[in-house]
Image 1 (cartoon, rainbow over the protein chains, first blue to last red):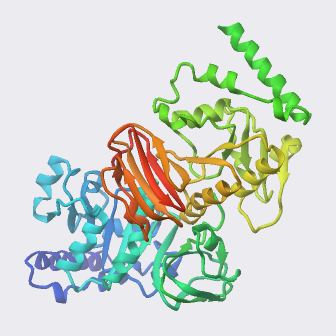
Image 2: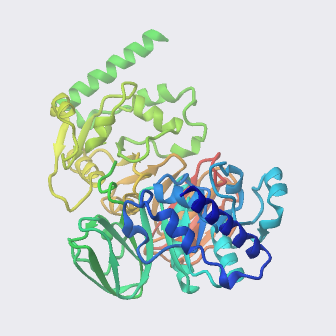
Image 3: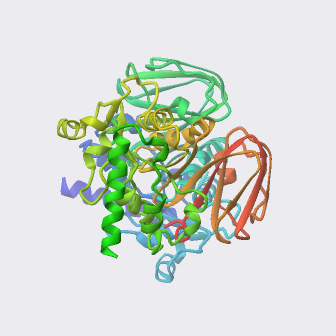
Length: 263
Length: 263
């Protein structure tokens, strides 16, 4: 087991070294590593959290420190961690080294800048925030990546949190599959009719952006064309999957299985 | 000084006793007590936070524990604290006793229920959340109260947070002046043209609900008819007041003076 882990570790590092040379983007695939790490299933007791969505890159923001086991596992092992600007200052020894650091550069500590200068990309313009700069970096420089998990982007200032959440819909327009995992649940941007899988009795909230003709199957409370955020909150699944019919875009929030009630 | 404080304390308790008898709602006024407590101004370094808005009741939710000095002062001294359901279970000895406990009753611990049974009001219906039940209680039972601060209503599950924030606009429709104070800033529901006062360089975000013809004075970035949450974030005041022109309703978020940047 130790030998296998070591061999795999070397393989991953070899892959990363080759990746840095810029020659193997298209061949780079960490799925073997991922399956190895996930085989015990100890970090993803809610297996549905990543069903059909194993992220190819993980963007780490400067909000609340991610504390769900799944996110901690990503921080410790995922080979493509993209760090939003000054978030790199708080990097912990137990975490995987960042793959890239992206932002406006205004909050990266000098020592961090020196240590990671080869993997830092600065977009100085102030029209977009650091989370969006990280997404744009991936979209432009690593177009093979489509599935991106965003963590550490909620908590602290609530206006940042609201902005970050709503930007998921913009990233989706770029053709990316993005999900925002928080310490309490996951936001999934959706357009038109969507079927999602999660255990019966999962707490679900739906935030409407541009959708009309909203209706649902297998949710406890009927949904409609919500015009205020609170109207779509505190619903519940009646089966192991549910469907939302709509024309247009909306956000689905699924609470983790131990987060059904207000703590 | 001690005698004065003692006398004032007795007066406040006498007032509260009379209030419980239900005969003196209209005469109840804690302003003297409030001014006494506030005279040192040690809990409200950002005096603008309560300029023209000294709350007549404070609703305490079960989200993140309020840690701003102003909110801690309310928890320790405000005579009209309304506790949302199971939040009462976490009541701390240093806090003022609740004035009322309101909710669906499903999370109040038996010991708490026994201790506070005279001030508990249960609305068992599940169409509204506990925060809204607390607001409706105040609106119906204490119609003299118009200015309400809501604290402890953000943090933890993000769908609860989004719902709670958006409900401010519903409470405003009841004729109430409500503000939600978080550990990082304050949400103020507004309709039509509004002028607000806060120091130059305060971080401001605006979340549009039904407003059209949005424009601003004395903000760093021009505002427009936002259709997504992120569009109105990360603005800044250019003077000690600013004005938003609009037709319809929107939410203004002002960050506290030490919270301009993402921590």
